[in-house]
Length: 315
Image (tube, rainbow, N blue to C red; front, side, top):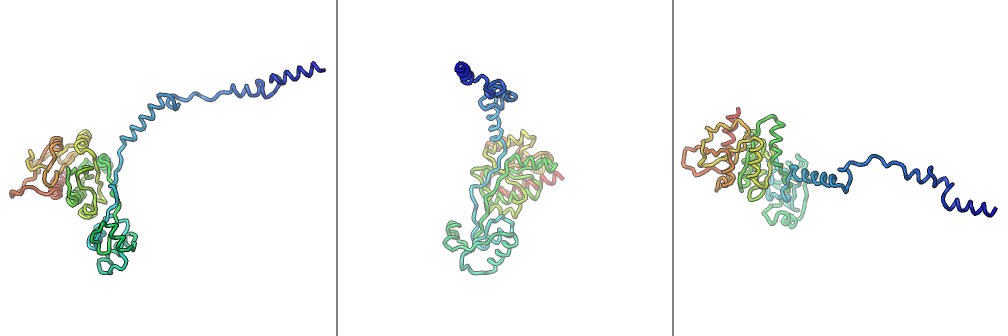
């Protein structure tokens, strides 16, 4: 009996006869399949997986991005605020100083803000001074949001969606926001698909540009580019002809025969005209004929005249 007990103990110790340790227990579960082997690109430590991740990051980096201007802006003063509200400039909120005299302009500002659902906030004069940087605000200021710029490629997409040949306006180092606003207004009036401006050393969509555009900036996109010359070459690669306005252009505007095709119209700065690299990149330089010996038109006017000629040629 003792021998049998010892043998049973030995069997139990070795695991033999234990139903959880035999071929129907732990060993069987250990032999169970783990499913199909993952593809190489799905294995985190495989080179194919790392290469796929790198390609995904590169695709995201090259995808068009929208930029926004750095910060909100303030319009100070009763007349400027009322004018901005009349012209449809986007406004986040109106700020009125405590105890400000309620004259006709202030009442009109309140009425326009109410019609557009714009918040009205009453603050101390000191706080309004701080918000507007010490500008003469006359007890009233408006806060406009940061402008969201389109990507230059968006303008080609817009033309395609409308079933039209692209017509894009490019401003080369135009620094006066009123000229930018006037160009945006003309672009909207004559059927352009957008306006492109450099990111640096050029006017942006400030309150002044919004106001001069007379609300057109809400109807047509404005895009920013880091490198203007490179962007013009990208438009050329997309099938557009790039035409620059220059006082010494090879062809006068009425004689230009490129207006009815995909076109990028480049307008130079107020004083210097087109920069050298931009002028060299253009497929053609055209001039606007003038009756008198006027040195040059400002950028906003030149843009409007040229777009009118293009629109006539496209009719």
